[in-house]
Length: 300
Image 1 (cartoon, rainbow, N blue to C red):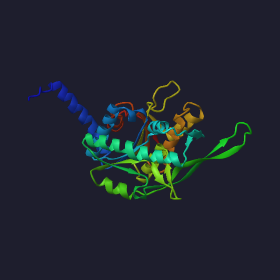
Image 2: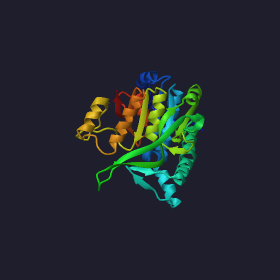
Image 3: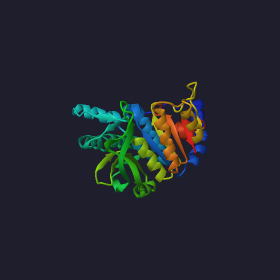
Image 4: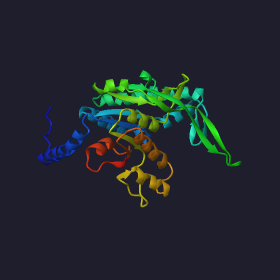
């Protein structure tokens, strides 16, 4: 069966794209890039395949990609299916014993293995792990302070089996870095008390990136990045500039915790963090291998 050859102009255009990408490929050669995958992109099969292709190409290009994923919508769907009601405090789910069992089943089970399989269908080799494997991430119980609206008194809220990273061991990830295998990590971790804890995926990704001294940590979200007062994308911000935008009310709402997670990653030793739109096909490649990137780069 014969195939029609591409027009010469199309082949030249493809060659130009590759030649422009080459300097950026060399910049990230043998460097670690942690990518947090989540949001609506996880529920879209086409975007999932494009993401898997990006991660596979990174590995083939000599980059060391580490994937971290969340799964809030999928967890909510499973809890609803099982008629398990959740309580919330300080904007976070209070996670009891029964809930954390469902969280582990969904994150470490169905979601994790689906991402692994999609990467392998794209030509890569992947392995699914959690913070438990190799005692990778040990956590302490996360507590939040809230102000009671009636009494105006601060009180500490126990969120149950929700943790924040305390120690990160990178031995398993360092071994995989030397192989062809791409790690796909679910943020389910052991606590110091031996219990199982759920960890916010952004926080988990920042902790992993810091421990690996990653060149970049990419947070794929449902928005283009940080917007200015005129709702235009800001391509690059220093930490001080980003903090000023928070203080002056330009950065508001759900973007504040995303930017603060970038700050935490920088504090842990990551060279730079990026907030970008995971709903854009091949957003990872556009960010790393093009001149203008695809989101907001936040630097120390």
